[in-house]
Image (cartoon, rainbow, N blue to C red):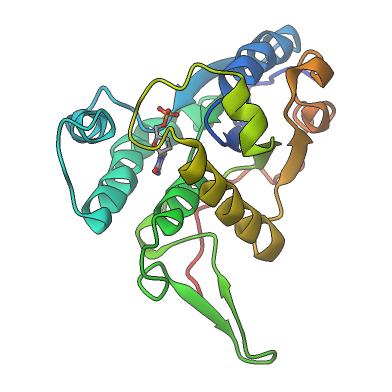
Length: 229
Ligand code: 2DT
């Protein structure tokens, strides 16, 4: 089932709270997929090595202040900076394991109380219910993942693990809000895989990934996030 010359790589996204184990899981998933004969790279967002990434990094370190919408759009711009390289890699057959993507963008910004209209509310006319769409306007046209794995962990448990680095969002109270917003995303539009995060249960890779990737079901065209309506 290894890589053959015709197939593209898969875009796999890991999401979750700080200290949910994304980094550990990525570094376990990498050798597992390589063992299947795939070419694989680990990526992460924000990518702090670009100009925009430096601004984000300084904001997260509390060295600069930015309006909530400004930083939201910078996170999105940071994904756009990497879009064409991402597409090139995928087309050349490299699978990307990406630590955080657009879902962090929505969960963290809406947890800060960003205006929900601005955040792009989708109205379901038939049921008169409002739901947050998991793709926001600035994300439209970015590459859509083949698989999103959410590492589910209670915020209290993540906090117990320690190692919060003192960055802007790394506080239990705020992480609780982020968890709520991830849940809203998951319960409404995002049909990602949910995996129990505690590492005691983790084997070589997030369980649900096993079996999905080698013959990943996505058709071999690269999809982009669709428009809302
Ligand atoms: P790391 O600790 O994983 O480097 O993340 N974030 C991330 C956002 O608010 N919006 C986004 O679009 C992304 C990708 C999550 C740094 C922090 O940045 C947050 C934690």
